[in-house]
Image (tube, rainbow, N blue to C red):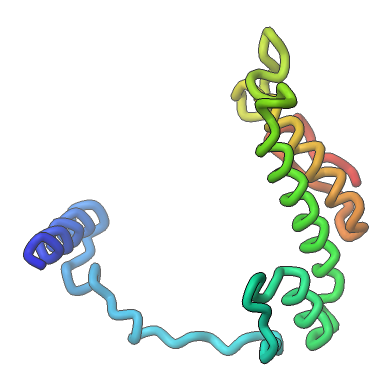
Length: 151
């Protein structure tokens, strides 16, 4: 208990030195803040699977049923979900498939000047294709691309 208090005291001192915040300002109580009212109606989940819980697909379908203005974003989330599952499989089998290491022997460079890895390039392609399929985006930007990509 003493070490926790000492640690909090040091955090407060560092905050005061760096940002000019006093100890009382550094230790704000979360109850002092109000939670803003939600802009959308949220689903009430009464029947939840004990194995999977509430999946992203189910949550987004229920949200879009309750809030018509969220129907367009549902397809983006679905596309990202499929891309993440695909990437999970690719990463899990990457060493067997030879998808590790640098993209090119000399090493290609991304837009931030970092060397590209094979999995970086593969992930970029998977995400681009998934987002293109959603039909909701006209342009995307990625650190793996030199310029924005028209969808």
